[in-house]
Image (cartoon, rainbow, N blue to C red; front, side, top):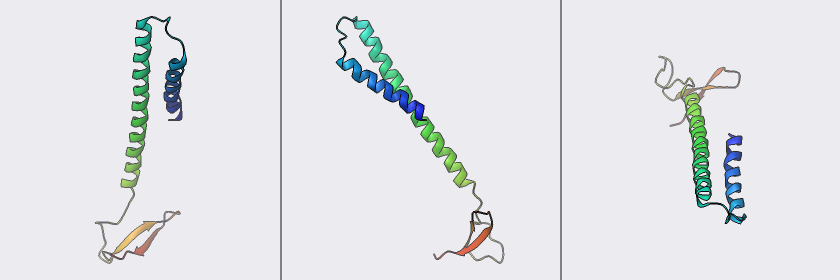
Amino acid sequence: MLPIVWVRNAFYIAQIVMLYYNVNNWSRTTNQALAFLFIIFGELSNLAILGLVLLGAMSFGKTVRDRPTSFGRHSKGARASSVSRYTRDDVSAKSEVVV
């Protein structure tokens, strides 16, 4: 994602440079084309960044949703207030939850 941010920042820097650069001798169509390209590519890079952020959020949501829990699948001996918690070594440890 970092190179996309760099590209977006490069477009911003190029726009600032164009403000202070003398473009009076350039044609009007050249100025309009540059403005159009800066707008389009700047917005496309913003859209790519948004897409990567949403993709990351969606994949993180899948990993959280796919974690095994004991909600709704209690055995006969399990109380409703006990929740299975997974530790680092993937051993299920029971803990009491105060409701």
